[in-house]
Amino acid sequence: MRSLGIIIFILGIVFGLALAFAAIWSDFEGFAYYNTGAGYGSFNGLACPILMTHSEKGIVTAAFKNPGSQEIEPYYEVSVSGPVSSGQFEGQLSLPPHSSKTIQWTVDASDIDLGFFIFVDLNILPVAGYSTREDTCGIMVLNFSGPSGGQVLGVTLAASLLAMMIGLGMWENSTNFNNSRAANQHRALQALGIVVLIALFMSFLGAWGAGVIFCAMSILLLVINLRLSIDG
Image (cartoon, rainbow, N blue to C red; front, side, top):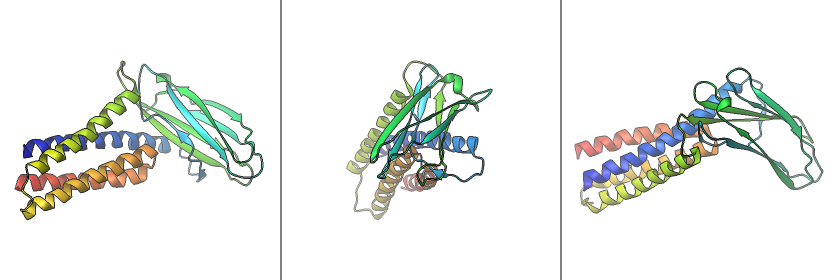
C-alpha cells in the first residue's frame, strides 16, 4: 500500500508538471517568436487557451481597462502566427472612465507555426499617459480530434490533483511516523505537491519565468523523494 501510494502520487506529479511545461513552453515560444528587443511595457490583458486540438477553434481574448477619470480610445494591433505570413488586424475602442471592455477573436489549425504552436501578439499604441504596451501568448495544438483542448486540460488537471491527494493519503495511512526518515519524507512529499501546484498556477497565469523556476524546484524535490523512497 505504501509503495502503491508513492506510485500514484508521482503519477499525479508527472501529470501536473506536463501541464505546467506545456503552458510554459507555449508562452516562452510566443515571447521569442515576436521578440524584437524593443522593451515595451507589459499589457497583461491577453488570454489564450493553453491547449487546443486540430479540429477546434480557440478563442483568444484581450481585456482593456480604463481606471482613470477621462475617456480613452486605445488603438490596438494584433498579429497571429502562420506558416507563411502572420495574420494581422487592428481596431480602436472607446472606454469611458472606470470601465472595461473585452474583445475576442478565434484561431485555428491554419495559424499553426513551428510544428504545433499558435502564437498571438497584441500591441497597444500610446494613449492617455500610457506608453506602447505589448503582450504575447502561445497555444500548444494537440494533433488529434475528438475532445477539445479545454477538456484535455480539465481531465489531466483533475487526474493530477486526485492522484496527488489519493497517493499521499495511501502513503500516510501505511506509514509509521515514529521513524524520523518517514517524517522527513512526508515533509518532502508535501513540499513537492505544493511546489507543483505553484508551478501550475504560475504557468496558467502566463508567468513562464516563475513557472520555470518552480518546475526546476519540483524536479529537484522529485529526485529527493525518489531517493528517500528507494533508501527507505
